[in-house]
Length: 54
Image 1 (cartoon, rainbow, N blue to C red):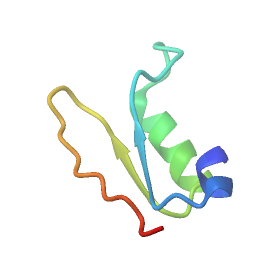
Image 2 (image 1 turned 120 degrees about the horizontal axis):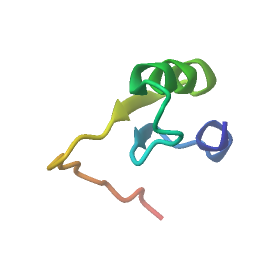
Image 3 (image 1 turned 60 degrees about the vertical axis):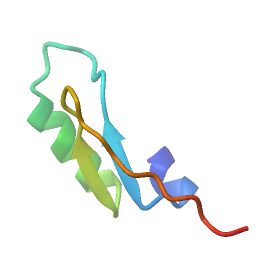
């Protein structure tokens, strides 16, 4: 919900807790609350970050 309110375009989930909840459940919850792209981070994931024009 915070990402949606902040107006970000992409949400990357990492270090998801509690660990006893399947990552796919968290991913589903996030997609329901956030209208943009949601990515579940994995080891060695590289993401290009673009700074918005001022």
